[in-house]
Length: 172
Image 1 (cartoon, rainbow, N blue to C red):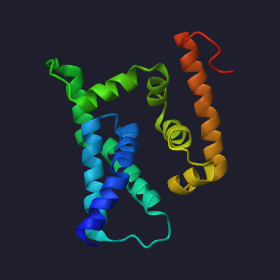
Image 2: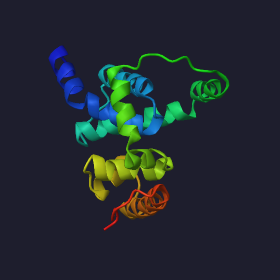
Image 3: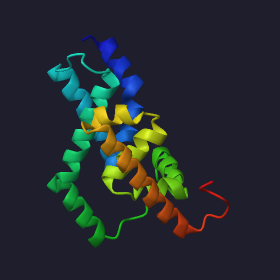
Image 4: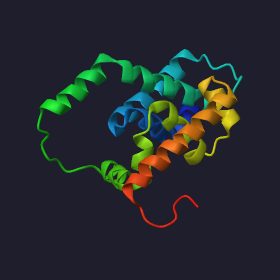
């Protein structure tokens, strides 16, 4: 694979994979690091056999790396440090400001608070416009499992958003 092909892949899928990773780790910097690791591993290993769409293959790698990060001791220590340290006020970057605005929206916040198995299917279905069959293939589960998770995720969102008293007929 030459440099131009590598740049093209990173340009095409970098933002998508970073947003996908953010859904899991809820930290923009960590998500960027994970995507960088995914691209490095992809370019070094060259294990892609063409059985699936390249976007699906990279998304699956990103999901696995994000889950590995969540299980890692480094993440657990970072969370504990956050509870015990007073964080200094710093000027947020433009990416952080954008994410902050997105998080201020009640729906985005409610989605991010869902358990991971519901959050991932909601994001993939509604934000990435994937079908339940595509999600099932990506997550290596049955389509019926994905449909069940979508239904339960929607129910959890209705409950969560109902408590916020958004006003108007949100569900109709």
